[in-house]
Structures are given as C-alpha cells and as structure tokens.
Length: 344
Image 1 (cartoon, helix red, strand yellow):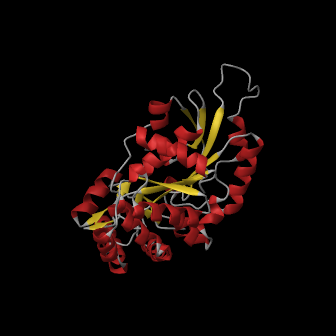
Image 2 (cartoon, rainbow, N blue to C red):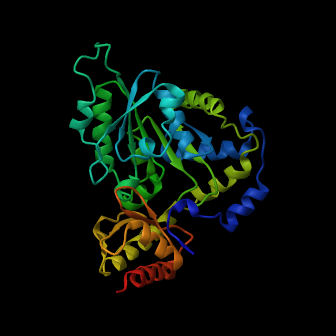
Image 3 (cartoon, rainbow, N blue to C red):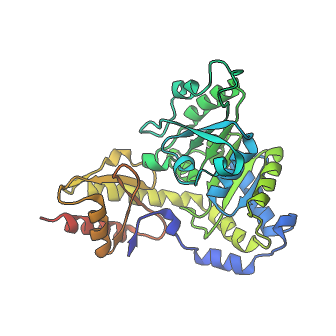
C-alpha cells in the first residue's frame, strides 16, 4: 500500500530505534529523565525560546497552551480551517470553559487583520461579550494545502496582538516544513509567537510526541496542565530519544516537498483531476476529482483497491501527504493508479 493519507504514518528509522533502546531514562514527572531534558533543551534552542515541555501529542500541546494562556470565560481566535478548531475535540471549551471564535482562513492560510479586529468588541467593558484572550495561527496550514505563513505576516499579527494585549500561539505542527520551504530558521517564525507547538511524529518521523515551547513561566504553567490532562509519561526518555534523532536532520523534509511537487505535476496531466501544482509549497497536495462518474468516496475506495491510500480533507477535497515512507517510485506509481482508476 502506498500510504499518502498523512505524514503521521512515518515509522522510526534504524537510528531512532537504536537511540530508543539505549536511552538513559528517569522519572520525567519529577523532571529527572535526562533524555527528555536534553530534547526539551534542544527544542527550545531551535525555536529560540527559553523553555520547552515534551507532550504526548500535538493535540495535548495545543490544549495545554490554550488553557495556560486563556482564562475561563474568555475566547480564543482560531482559523475556521484550523486543526485546533476542527480536529481537537473542542478541548479548551470542554476542559477550560474557553470558547472558540473562528476567523475565515484565506486560501493562503492567513487570517486577515480586519477579520481579527472584528472579533474584538467595540466596548471591552460590555459584560455580554467574551473577550479575546489569545490568537492562534497554524503553520503550515493543513487544510489550505500546506500553505506557509511568512515571517513578515507573523510579525504583522504579533504587532496587532501586542497592541491589544493578547498573546499569540503558533500551532506549528509542521513548522519545520515551513522553515525548509522558505529557507528560514524555525526561530524566524517562532519569534513572533508567545508559544509554539510542533510535532515530532509527522514529517520528522518520530513515533510519538510533540514539543511545546515558550518562556519559563508559560512552560511551568503548561506542565501543570499536562499533569491535569494525564500527560505525565514517567520514563519518557525511551520515546524522547527518537525526537532527538528527528531534530538532527530536519533539512530532509525538502525531499518530501520534492515528492509532493512531482505528485502534483503528475496528477495535473490526468483528465478528471483538478489540482494546482503551483500551490504546492510543502508536503501536502490537495486535489479534486472532477470526473462525474465518481464521488470522492468512490474514488478513494477505488484507489485503495489498487494500492493507494488517500483521504478527504473537507469540502470534498482529497489530500495526499508525502513523507519518508514513500519514494519517487511510489509517487510515480500513485499517479499511475489514479490514471488507471479514471481511465474510460
């Protein structure tokens, strides 16, 4: 099976498995796992923040960030197409009494400043309105096809937020993809956010885990939330070791971007497929089936029957995500399978 549903299907490399088997461990809930501490220090350095906390998942990392930043009864501003809003089970509302206000995502992933401005009440003392306590951005923007928010745009949002006294959280699940795509250091994006989450278990290839980074006070609060949510992992160095290996070669993600560009170019040559190769900036390809004989469900099933796994990602669009588990031969075979499914 050529697995293109997500880059979460990556499996640990031999180097990761060796590091995991040899990891020095301790009790991380007591702050005494040396491998976890090394991973947290490395993550904080790469992102340009003072501290970091190893989390079991990106969902928990984002939730811990929202609950640390946002008081009960406030609201957070999130993209209408964001993972936080759509795929994370409304955790801040359930666990923290924090509401979400969705702001329209532009096709390039941005939230327009006038749209953010409209979410702030004209009279902040009016008791009937929940006050914004946090702005959340996503980079790369998953449902916008892996779109990259530029450092210049992030700076504009930072200035907007600072003028209104609210922090910014960056859901950087694929932040290193953004950094590689624009040839920037990840810290060039993160400097404009108060907190940043990034996943080790997507394109970076580790089997589990995400990092939450920020200043010391924020991370201290997030550790307390992690404990409340059941995220204390004790001898977590066994999995943190794989994260250290993953962070040693983030430039490898450029290979995945090349595979995605090749896939989009191939799909663009097939009648019955609508795709814009120029829109592919990272490792995500979004496309539609325009052949009237197929619903997206029928197409996904037919492709899977021939050995290609893809997924729907909202509004009837299909998503293919490249990663270390597929090579150029797999990409060419995926194009061949799509052409075969649509052959008349």
